[in-house]
Image 1 (cartoon, helix red, strand yellow):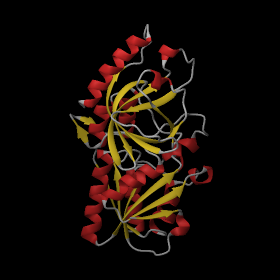
Image 2 (cartoon, one colour; image 1 turned 180 degrees about the vertical axis):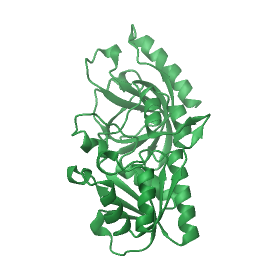
Image 3 (cartoon, helix red, strand yellow; image 1 turned 45 degrees about the horizontal axis):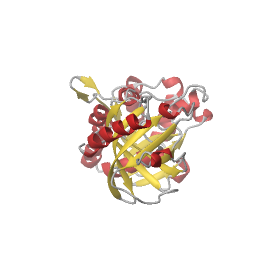
Image 4 (cartoon, rainbow, N blue to C red; image 1 turned 60 degrees about the vertical axis):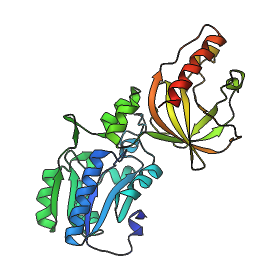
Length: 307
């Protein structure tokens, strides 16, 4: 898969089948769109192309005033797309100037002139251009003028409910990582570097690795304790992870993400970990004593080992 980081990296104009969107999460609904794109590209001998944006448009349109937490960083998204069979991904830098481009100019100047789009495939709710005025009806009208075909892909549903990035975000914010995994088509994950912490876990015989996220806009699940898998140097381990404020130790408002890796004893400060969420075990709780906390951690450990 070729990644073009900006319009200036388009060196060769070749007829394309194109889809457009942010594709945050690359979930099952997105994969339905990509699958249809690949099918049309194959039938017509076109280059399958995704047009996406960085940073996420909402980070720019709202001037940074509205917090936006995402399911995937740009790197995570590209790694997921790599396995979906696309020939090329065009990442358009999204800034204030670009946000003012009207939908007609976007279609004419980018899709037609720069990408030579012959087929355009979009999701059922996709809109584009200034103030998101470009809907499918407008796309369809302009397709006749500019000589390409336009197709809308109907929503992908599970149990009668539409799979969408916003719905998945809601589930994760509620701690329902197992349900979110069904919509994503994989378990939710995050990446971070191991940093120094207070080292209290050692006094409980549950040493933890404190994580600093690689991507500041990454969406975190609801505070609590989770059964997770941990990837370290391509090896996979079971673990239990806490997100929150550790109320038993009265640490005030010090927010932490820390994971105890089961059956593991290595010095990994500075190393990268990938955390894969399996199930939320419980909420954070303030225990009356150190012994009560250890007893609960043993229960968490048993549950994590068996998931």
